[in-house]
Length: 331
Image (tube, rainbow, N blue to C red; front, side, top):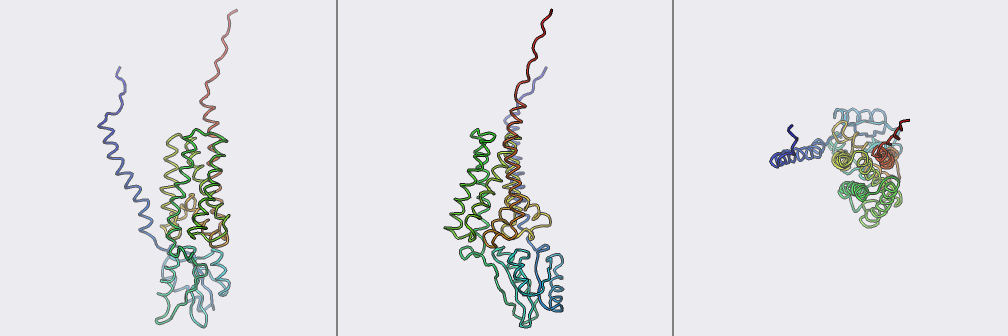
């Protein structure tokens, strides 16, 4: 009877030669496609002023079909408060003295620049649009480049935490404790660098450390939990969700509403996207609109820790040898 033989070296070489280009094409597509399609899609924007003037502005903005989700406010104070609370990315205020655009570059310099261009383009010829940056980006990172670049390292720190925890043989409650402790230390360290040294983050120091720690815990627990449940393939699945897709769909370099329809919303349900939104909220907006992204991170952390603890118990239970029945003695 013929026996199965291992794949030949030639077949394995061919498999590698085919697999690598496919993976490269997939990775490039996931990262490049959203970046190449950046444009406003139902981007929340406020309009305030007398009814007739505000209506005219709203009509002009409506010419950009599907680009803006317009919110009407009674006056400039209400519009400013909406920007500060992250209800909208900016607001157009029409007064007798002219048109003013309120922006928040701390919420995304790319979005602030786009709003300046869009509002200036719809203004009457020769009219000047005064721009007020209500919540400015940090002076040490005016274009948000350092903030955007910080997300991938956070994901890698979380991944390394989960992988090392599993590969060092920690299981169950000990693994969960190691993940939580490492995340706490990572939060303090990153806050010290990003806030105290680089000036990329400028909000409450401990709140920033907490968000960073929760992010590392969410990603690390995802790696550890999925690996505990699925074995080595769990590492691959976690990497796809939190590093490949999670970073590409996060919208951290622009805004979730600037990505293709559905992609930005999906990215906010993954740890990197939620982390970017939460960090922006606690760093520049006194925690405004941080509730939802913090909830997403907490769910990922709790689910990952649960898989790490209870998945290990289930694996050990299924691996335990079945009890051998006692022999029946003949009478």
